[in-house]
Image (tube, rainbow, N blue to C red; front, top):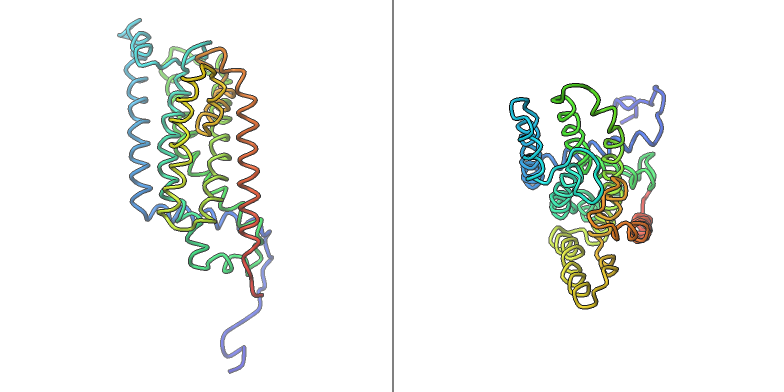
Length: 295
């Protein structure tokens, strides 16, 4: 059968940039997550936390409460303005959400990347005009979008909500640095957690090993860190905990440290997080480069 009779024809349009393929990878990855109950379970937990904070701000900002609203926020440990030595409310919310994000990524890692390697889907992507760097960028962007959906977006809504229920727009003007800090903390979580889980998923591929290794990475060092700090009396041992390091870096962007001495650990935590991220990114690139593509 001739090629014309088979209804094949040449492409007559304008070819787009291969980087546009990253958006297709992001869309496909997020659609895959939407079909899994684990994602909806994590999203429900995230929404429950968000609605709790949303209702707290709504009740506390009612004019008829007067000073009782501020006292309610203090009881719930939610401060709406930066204050030295106190837990900023948005920081508290971001850290609560990040725990849920870690749980979701533990079970979604196989679906995000591991399934592509296990079912030999990576060559399907790479045999197009999409190169390896486009594939990696697309997967990392998908994880960043997921993390942002559960952290940056709801925290920004809480900031807008509090400003909307005050008597003027002065809260938004005087505290313009808060949304910048929220985005900064969200980027730390997106980049750090994203690169770590994608690299881990590319190598382990299956859900059970990924979930076990991912949770162990955060949970096993937690009791070791607490034991060393208690025995030695030196809080520098907190830096061996990657989850603690992420918090140090995030608190650095928000400018909030419950203990003044924690501020000195933020630069070291940033170096540790950057080092772990660089190692994970190198391992991910090597894993993707090992994929053979038959052109």
